[in-house]
Length: 634
Image (tube, rainbow, N blue to C red; front, side):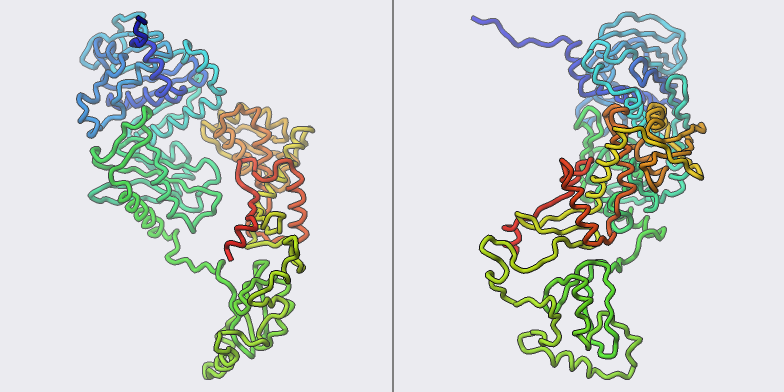
């Protein structure tokens, strides 16, 4: 008989497996240790880093501390002081409760813990390496806890190898630190990296904490949101529409003092800004939900960022109403939308008015022939309609005017609702039931002359294609063309600098400044002339000559923000980010009217590229509606 093959894994191996979910990078360690300090009742927490957390992550707090027995037991898997029974999962008031974090950290790092309770005279110093306790001895430490995590992933080379550059890892730590700072505004928090203080935050209100983290400019454009119902209490802030950002928008949700990610609630907030901001920007918001703990489930993932709500749909409606009320109360949201952009121009009968036409689009819908006419053709044939005007002006008519003009208008209609022949626009007149032999030849190609390109609402270019109708996003197409050209220039030649008459100033967050320090030399080689003024402020004295008339500050911030979001190395991604930023600043905007020649040139340049259908960010540029789909529609 064969021997049994199933065996129980050793605790050290089980802890390493668990660490794969709980401890993904240095930022995960910072999150778990700071949350433990908060649960311990600390009012002062200090985070000290070396080499973006690779070498050292140290968290010092003035919390309740631990006894010798508790300190040893805290590193055992599923050991916790937060809950005692399964029912406690539905009444959580602490950040941690799973009992996995410290065991997972100790499994993949060298840990040294010094802790003492306020009532004890002597504390304990515990040293663990790879889940193995190496020493445990008395220590005369301060009250609270001092946790040092050294050489993260020292015994898991593959995990350590795939850590990103220090700038990327530090950026992730800063984002995690910001979330923790926002949800705990009453705690003094300090973060130090390689002996440089990145943040030193004093206790205060949420609004003050936002200003400490992101600057007074963000704090000043906040609008309060507050409502209370039997299901949820919502409070916090949303940003004014004019403070919306193209990149790195500040969007935070908290529930019962815990950070959370919730795309469904995010959609509720975005709906409130629908007609207030452009499609390429995002609003800022900092919103806290207070609910009965029994109505939410935080035990979905070890990171505890995903949370399920029992009354999700109702809370969605309450949230949307609260945000709309806040925007309306401070007069940043219109009461009614009177936009006429999508309303067709309808000719009105006015015999004494001079025919005029002023359209901001390339086509015009004729309600009489029920066809769309090219703008030029309609302008040319307005003389054939002497008794009609496209503008209705009450001031041109006398108050005593009779309704005889309307009688004349209606007299021209027959019983079938057809317009009289003399009112038709002959240049765009089309029979009601055209015969296929008149419009198509044997191969299915049009036999009548049609324009090769047409612009729609200043956003899209329509053009016939072999398989149907081709639709091109003009802004994305131009971004793609410019991007490829600028990237080629940046990669093949040294880029000259264009000096600015008046230098521009930008202010970076500590996380962004780390990125700037790591790429400033490469930016200089590519044509930027930058100078650090200290305190996160930088002066832009010159920009690459290929940048043209683009906004220097917006361009630089786009590059830095793009690198901050990217997991690629800064050097490898820098040229692409710069090229994309410059291309976006120079590309034609949506709503800009183009001539047929300009549209033809843009299409020619686009389809000369090896990959014309997608932008560098992966957005669709070209869409083809096939002939079968068009035929089925009619």
